[in-house]
Amino acid sequence: MTAEEDDALYVLTAVLLTPAQFPSVLGDDYPEACAALGLEPFAEGYGLVLGQDGEGARWTVATEDVTLVACAIAAWDCGMEYDLSPDDRSIAAVLPGWPLALAVAAPGVPEPHDPAPDPEADGGRAALVPPDTEHWGPAQRRLGADEIALQWAVWREQVDGDVEFVDPGAGEDSDGSVRRVLDEVRAYLEEPPPPGRVRSAFASGESRTLRADGPGWSMVARTDDIAFLLLDDEPGEVLPVGRGPELPGLLEALDGIAVRPAA
Image (cartoon, rainbow, N blue to C red; front, top):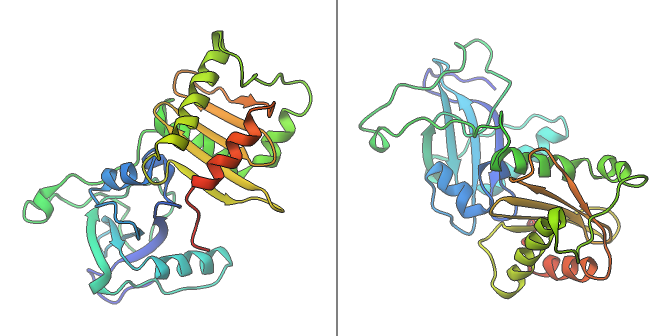
């Protein structure tokens, strides 16, 4: 995207920040993701526009016009051009830096860099930086769960043959971690968690892809199939949980309280 003025923003990408759709690398739920950017977790959410100014500095614009950003993302996904220019009246915040790692840059401007701190602007807050995903931890765990959700068929095929499923009813040793997580998931049915802790997205047919997160764990499941667990305490491990007599009912109940994309 081009700009006519030096202070205009060269848009590189955009993402949604809503209870149903947010960059999970930023947090286990929507309020936590908002807090990472210093934004209030309003129910309507935001669109995040990431770009560079004429000097190459990184900026993130948070707009309340979620529909505009959603339309732009949909058009770009289809290979179409879309002029993403939020109205000034819809802009909730202009933040230095990027909260996500980008491998692209605007042509014809200097290399991406953080702008110099401005004490008069937002108290001179430090520039946003992507979470550390080089080492196993919450951010890497959530990214792993994202990958499983996106590549479900690939991961599911890997456990079809010779992988032993964890018994969701077990309570000892490594299965004890699974038991603990499932108990925490079930507790969400009694006391609703913060928005975004449980999300439901279209899968295939009448099934849904469920995503649930909590302190130290992430779960990805299909309502008509199994679940996968990732734990902070077990770096790089993916634990498949068989359906058994317990999982189907739990997944159905979770889908009932999950937030869903508007469309």
